[in-house]
Image (tube, rainbow, N blue to C red; front, side):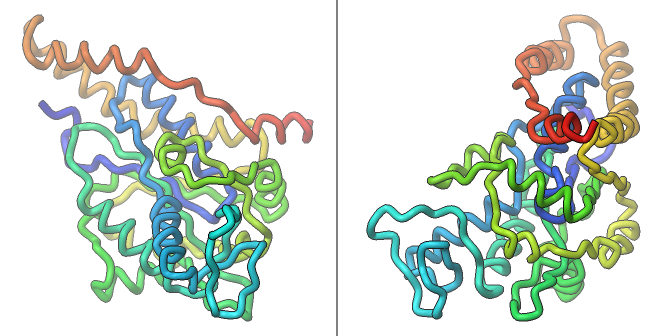
Length: 297
């Protein structure tokens, strides 16, 4: 049984850090439910891959990242007194490079389940002249073109939602986040992880250079939608418009396939089963954006 006429089953939400990617992913998943579009419950996020790389680095004396409680002299550190993991700051490209290899390999090997995969990916230019850390889209494009990163996933991308926000909005939203004590990968997968970052880390993604990689995506016939997060209700209204364009055609296709099959078939039973899953959707907290929009009004 196939719900999609093509194998394009990946939806990527991307932008600098603290622009609202996870909130957008949750809202889009909620809208997909309203259109009766099946999707995988886990969000695939580059932040989880970075956490995994950081944990591995901690096992080797933490030579490529620091925390607020330890000094950065290239001599490493240990968590031998239950020191907190968050916040952390990478000091070179060792962990970002590992993160990218893991992340894009994971995208390339996602199983085909006839459901959408929602993916979060942060990118941007580091505006700290004294830091070598590189999360830019231009760098990823170069790595893809040189064959240093898996690119098989490109053929499966249905749409890319690129979110932007002004610096004051990003910093305001970031301040409303909490700093967790422990790593919780499940929270990232469920779309409930929002941890506060220091301003130095925010500036690692200080300038959006998505335009550098946009042409590559267009050459793969990937739909690109731009959304600006101003901290107001317009953010969600824009996501609703995008969701309608992405999901309505698929929703109609499911209805047509269902109508053409006799009652009681395997397809009919499968759709009925998935409908039960749709009815048990997690409540979507509008999180920080509603609070911010109310203060602006």
